[in-house]
Image (cartoon, rainbow, N blue to C red; front, side):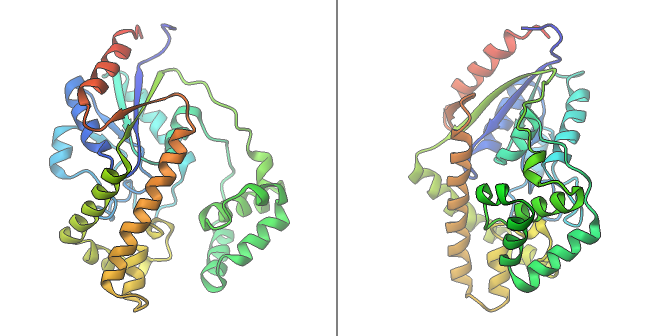
Amino acid sequence: MSGKEKGVLIVIGGPTGSGKTGVAINMARQLNTVIISADSRQIYRELKIGTAAPTQNEEKQAKHYLTGNKSIHDYYNASIFEKEALSLLEELFRRHRVVLAAGGSGLYIDALCRGIDEMPDIDPQLRENLIKEYREKGIEPLQNKLKKVDPDHYRKADLNNPKRLLRAIEVSVMTGTPYSQHLTGQCKKRDFKIVKTAITLPREELYSRINQRTDRMIEKGLVDEARKYYRFRHLNALNTVGYKELFSYFDGDIDFQEAVRLIKRNTRRYARRQITWFKKDNDIKWFSADDDGAILSYIESVAKNHNG
C-alpha cells in the first residue's frame, strides 16, 4: 500500500431501516473516530423526523458531519456532496487514521469513492421554468424534451424520475451538448484507502423494521413536520417518501391510514432499490446488522494494515 495515502475511509452502506446508524455509531466509538453522513436527505436541517436524522443522543455518542447543514431551499446534489465531503476528509484525516461514511444514498457513496462527472452550473431561470412546466403539466413534457435533446440518454434514463430528467435536460440545453456526452464514467483517484461494507438483513426482518420505524416516526410528530413544510412541497428536498404521501393526505386525495400504508410500502420499495444498487458493487463486503464483532474485526484488520 502506498505511504501517500492519508487514511482509511470505511463505508457503511445498506438499505433504509437496516440499522446502519447504530452500527456506525458503535464502530465510531470503538475506533474513536467520526462519521460523515452519505444520506441525500439528512443534510436538510428542517427534515429531522422523516429522514431519521441522528438524534441529539446519537450525536453525543459519535460526531456526525454533513447532517442538518443545508436548508430545503438550498440547491444540492451529488457533485456538491463530493466536493464538500472530500474537503472535510482532508481535515479529518489530520486527526483520525480511520473515518466512517454511513448512509443509504448509493449515488452519494459513489460520488465520494469514485468521483462524479463534472457538470456545468445551471441557469436558475431555466430550472425554474422546467419545474413550473413539470408542476403544471406532469412528467410527459420532460420525457419528450429529453428525447429531443438527448435520445441516447432517453433510452437509458429512469423516465419516471423527474429530478434525473430535469438534470439531463438542463445540462443538454445549457451546453448545447447531449447530457450523455458529459458522462465519462471514469473513476477518479483518491489519496486515501477505501473499504466498503454494507449491512444486510433477512427481507422479512428488514420490512418489519421499516414498518415499525414508520410507526415511530408518526408517534414522534412526522405529520406535524410534514404539515409545517407543506407549502414548500414543490421543492426537490420534499419529493421524498414520508412527506409525499402525507401531502396527498393533506390534499384530501387519501385518508390518513392509506397515507401511512403507502409510506411503509414506498419505503420498502426504496429499500429494494438500494439493495439492488449496492449489490452491483463487487467491492462491498456484507455483514449482518447484529454482528458488530465481525464488522469491527474486519475494520480493525484493515486499519492495522494501513501505513498512511
